[in-house]
Image 1: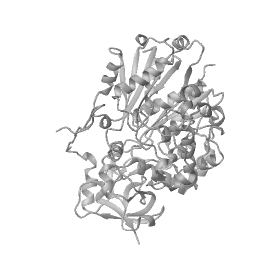
Image 2: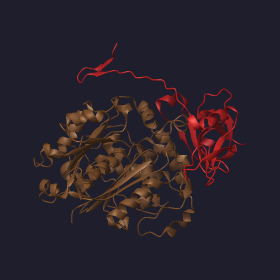
Image 3: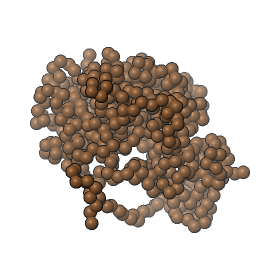
Image 4: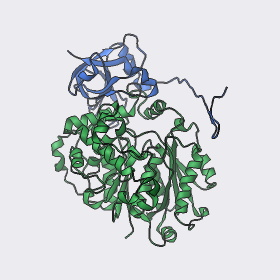
Length: 428
Length: 148
């Protein structure tokens, strides 16, 4: 396989409603990425594209990828639409990687979008819930926050995870997003404020849950040769690891067994879980995706060999669950790791320095690519350049992980049905 | 007549509605069983894994399964009280969504808990199945209530 690099990225500001068409949103995200290359990339040199969006219901347009391909002036070049629920964007990066690594394309534009604002929030939740088993789960629950709340309740029951620990994660992500001009929400929260906010589904209150968004994001993937041409100063990243895991559509069908060990781990270290893993409290797909990605990137000690993580925190609770799947702490110790300050920007391993989905928003098909863009900008030491807004007091320096050399972005679908872990690194 | 919400940009209403004729196919007996006040599960003929909801083909080893009647008493594995919902369920909130453990069943079963105060539900609570007399051929034809 050929080495695959990421040279540029762009996003639109995620918003409750963006009244441009989806194709124009995508063009804006693409133009941002192009402009950041200072005219070195002629769009004629792009050889292929990957288009990602989640829901035909939200968009009320089938084959939207043909509209965007057309609008971006990419016809008649090869393209594919990728869809995998919340992991749509992460899977799109994987598809772009395959395109370039395989030699099918030297330069691939990966872009994604979602426009969720054309229906009300309750209807939007209905559309999202159609991504649960419509024979057995949707008619009973019909609400993703409800499914995640049951996982959180079990995690609390099994491990003693507290409401305060969940609230701290939400507070952290809002604080980070406060210095990110792309974020949908610029709000300050306290633990008490989060806990006293309206309850959505016990134990999850409104600020612990991401919101509906409109937005688009783009990344430009290419060969090393192209990367050196487009970024002559070496300011690009290399994708050094990819993982993709899956799990049963119905959360209740997950097995109980032994933890999948990460590279270098002795599975005995998880004996204390007594073969009850993953159950409904952990994500087997995330563990498997991490295992593959770490093996490929040569990561043996994720906590010390990764500089930051962009995690798919659709819920504060799923961020906590994911710390454990990613091997940043032991299963059951996610809450303790929060109390110790582990995932904060100045902590042991910053998680969601961008503010994550909770604060940046979650336009489903764009989300995983947005996480890739933030990962790229972190590694380019460019958070200040891209994310600051002096007039509004947003200082991207405050969410820049200093000297970051390796970051990962984690994209997640359903109740953990599709998960990707992609490792980005500065070139040596 | 098209509803206009805004002029620039022009925002207009669009309506979409559809009825499906949906088949439960190979798991139809589960829904038919609910009418007989039975919880029908399947067991793998090769590895013995048990499935509720049922599967014709084992989700672990791929072999064929056989039907059997699951017990109707178990306990709450986890739950949540929903105060917000998808549009279709807004008239029903607040309600308790739960996964129930049943003896001899490897999976946990998504259902609603009724027959008690919302705040009285807890993890480990003993519960038993109740069935609708007038079925609507959905998994809501069964729900669970506290055993005591």
